[in-house]
Length: 391
Image (cartoon, rainbow, N blue to C red; front, top):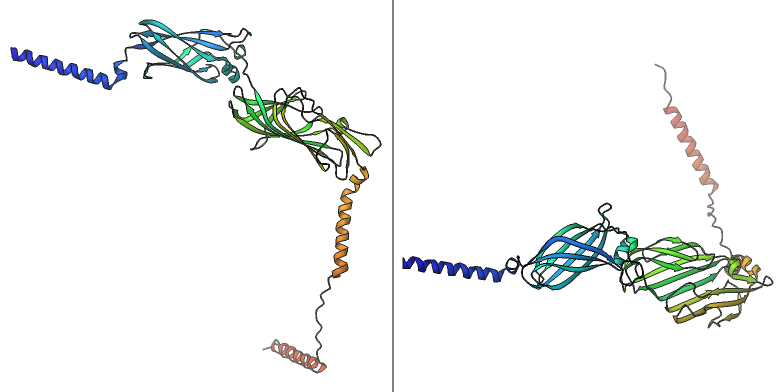
């Protein structure tokens, strides 16, 4: 009897030791009963700054805690059950919780909801972790108690900075103004897939592209909305090219058909600092620069460079030049004339190409008579060989 009791005690001790060992080796299983999600959430839109828009959607996640400790809740994937459009937002929050039914609040970014244009009805998933980041529990597809539209949430803070702008203004001989712009921009605010750019009054024939090709735009009064090919995240850069024509009569005036004046601005309609602005102005071929304000360093192709340009700076300029319209009309003819003169010089020095004439070979009369006699003899022989006598 004593031996049986001893064996039972040893067996129980082995089982207890193995249980403790397995608990050490498997922390998830050991802590599976420390806390769990009840599947209940409390949601509310919160206007933190009092401007009338929800800065975030507060989700109160209910947790049943059996062992006091620090726990972390992670939630993401707000979506609409009708359209299945979703908000790619993931957020988390942690807190020390006592035993019992407790709640951890997490904040879903309101600007993310607005930017995605999603009217959220459900939260896709919620995870519960312990202090060692071991996953304890999960719940999916929980409905929100409130009804929300994306327009109730905070409009994203899109802050675009121009690192560099290169502009070229070309005055054509045909009375046209062609403007090219290269923008290197940096996104200092919320992620965006569109950018607003200004353009001069009367601009037309727009061409907007990035490094890969043309982009879609919509234009308003001196403003255009450019739809980017991909999303530009915070602190990312993008390069855009915007080209267009301007009406000549709006920006260029003449006094007597010879003296012309271009009045324009180096850049228009911007609300942030331009780190570097470079502008070049090309006059029509044959034009003579009279004056410019501000003064340019070169008279052939005027170039201006500015640093840290602010919206309060005066960027207007004026260029006065002399130009004969006749020069522009005859400019192509002059080139044709130059080519004709060059051809005449070549002919004068080297002469015209000589015509190639086939050589004449003289045949003695004696040889010619011998050839004719031989030909007649063969013709007679062939004639007799083709004659058939009747049988």
